[in-house]
Length: 293
View (tube, helix red, strand yellow):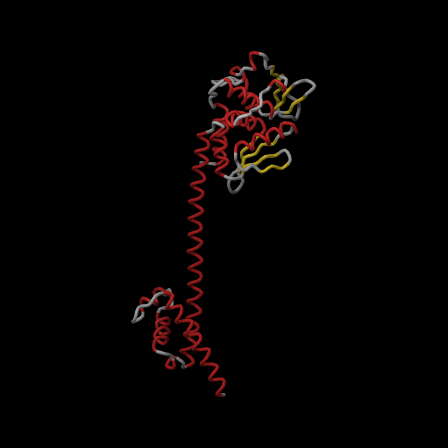
């Protein structure tokens, strides 16, 4: 699946995912609002993420705020803000002190689902994915740090930014926040990418082996020709002489193929050993000839 389409599907699933209970709605709404910019003087939350506003109060099967216990005490006032050269923003009026904070792992996942919707992201650079939470408010950042520790995931923290880079951790986060289809789709992309990486590694390994074989064959042919031209061929032991003659007659053969085509078949490693012995023999032969001179 195309990465952009996958990310869009994940956000669509987040927006339309069902709410299982009033308690779940309470904590998700709390996380959603706490991830927005907050003005203590006016008790207002502001966001440019229209999907976050839609999740709270918009049309559709899920109207999160209406399902919460907060709705019985507070009427979440919504107003649209539009400024020239600015993205449209949505403002909610609600005292932050009235919002619940999670104490258990189950409640934490609902809270994090809301928080991620209002200040989080899932990004796909050239390789892999990473999931982030960027929290502007210092108090909420400190609270989030404690709650994230409950998840057992490998979060990296830098100031007010929290990041998951491990693929398994990201899918675990998505699955536990109710974005299960997205988690499975993301897992599929990881499997496909891993298969491609393995295929590329195998291809690179094969290419490297071929390159080494070609280089070795060239060096052996050059050596064999020097032996033939210098008249040293008859001075070689029979097994080495046979190997030189075979290499000259089969310049494209691999070491394994040379071993199979000798009168007494030998392994690839044995052929390699004989070439080393041949090089040693030639080196000693040249030394002896120079000594005579």
